[in-house]
Length: 396
Image 1: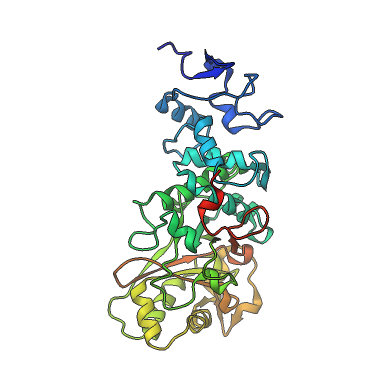
Image 2: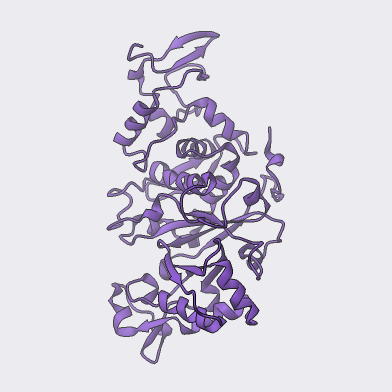
């Protein structure tokens, strides 16, 4: 095949070869579209792809233009993007958010394009769409999260029936590889940060070392395994509503406790894992994510502890010496200092507690961004404000 025969399209009912020199195969997928919001501004009519481009070639071209996370992508052809647009009740050119630092316009279509690139299934579209809206919330402070030298990532937690419908993993290996929803939803968010927000490492993303959590950081809460109310119920939603929660979090650190038989002993192990001087929480206290394994949660619950009891105990006992905490670089919050110690959280509610994982007496601690960011929980809703209970409501 000639080098110019990368894509064949229908135009006016007749096949036509697009010259690769027009740039529409790459640039027009990502950069600002034409006033008519078509993916290819060169052609007078919208086009239908019926022969795929060279996947390896396209993936490498995206990479060379700093439009990927370094991993191969799925070429975002119009036909693939259209499949995603079937799972939203919004128009393709509707703006979901303005994303810093570049202040890129995150339209429905652009979100779909990056979701295709990430390898998502079309059914994941409403989750990704709401996630983009959530991170744009003022209290989440995306400008700081994207620009900081700190290795903070965006963690997405799913609750409710749609998380089950799309097959999100909340059990064994939920923070690792092997599940397409966990892997690609988190990746789609990261590609949107790169291609829409402009958070390209070394350009709009200044993390000193970065973090593996920036590739993908997404999981579901194991609601059926939790002895307590789930995160979204804890935050005011009904159990039958579907929500996404975004929280600025570092990569998680394991808590290995196979011997403790009481709630207090397990929580003390968690506390001593969390109480480290080098985290942001040690000098600007704020939220911290505790992912408690089902076996630990069962022991704590059966010992008579409610969810708020757990959060309060962790809040009151997780601290570091002021001398160590004050090395973080920002001015210490004096109100958080008691008896020469600084607490990592400001209040019990700063302890974001979820249950997830499979068999094994392990939990996870993920430090936050301090008081610089507040997590956001957002129900999945249709344009008219009605809760989205099933993906069937979106089928077109």
